[in-house]
Length: 428
Ligand SMILES: *Cc1c(COP(=O)(O)O)cnc(C)c1O
Image (cartoon, rainbow, N blue to C red):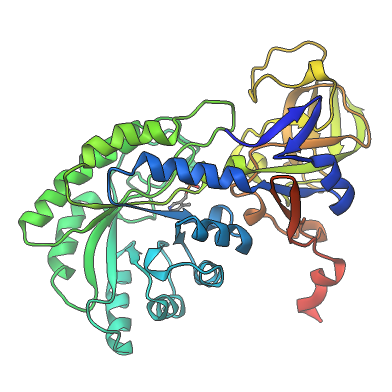
């Protein structure tokens, strides 16, 4: 599932002992495996090879320029949700035709920048947004036929995930109700400034089965048929992202399994398929490496205090997300056999792994059975590549941590650690 493996009790990122990285760049640090990114992308490309498929990696999941450049070189396009992400994607050498732009609150400035770049699809989230896009296209004098849009619809399927991660139900701020879609096409589908040519759905994130995707496709295909019968040209179906990532060993469908469920439904429909994977490509492609500062007993609890906090990785605090944590150096008999919440293994003690931030919510794991750890030990927080660094902040005036990219036996810093001067630079 990824290229973070123990060798003789020591954790390696590809062929680099992570302790070597800690010695050179310090902790905490995000450590990415290039081979894992490439492998996950390739598996997805291969899984959907029977359809005309464009994969648009979700920039918000992991937006470092060097990562985006790598993805672009491997043939990926990008799913963006802001002007800043457009800027990043272009700076990384993205093919603008393979950029799709979602988001309920696109500003005029952001829309104009995307028009000037010539992106592939505006993923429209409301009628007012579409009217505004048409207005801006006409004002700019952008050539007709140059601007394509997809209507984001809510197929109202239950994604069975944390409520903060559901986006495809009714009563969400995203997209328009699927029942409204025909009316929207009737109203805007025949003007020539913006070509409304596709349907977009994005159901949410963190699902564990393919069922919601099959449901969504089953609801959307009749809509596409109906629109075509009314004379609208529908060129593409954008299925969004949210494909599972193995936060625990083999608990979600593989890219191949998703494709097995979806490709037969979409074959011979004469549709370009667009996919916007984030997590499923990058979650397993990184660890957050942290060092134990102190251990202590508090009441009946045992605490392991580490140098990474919720400002560095907010997913446990925000979503109650599970991240497997394990010492980067351990005795061979204590190497984990799987990354799992219910690992069976002797000789562990139950601890809370907490950070240095002044908030009760600052934890990375609660009631977690770990091998005994001591001050100075390195801990790896696994599956930290998605919404890890990109959601990090300077809270408590903590400089953001470096990002390191490993390729085979070598590594390089792709974002340096921030300094105290960086923290105040914009206030001088
Ligand atoms: C966040 C997002 C994605 C990526 O979601 P993952 O769960 O990381 O795959 C894709 N499309 C849109 C519109 C998004 O907002």
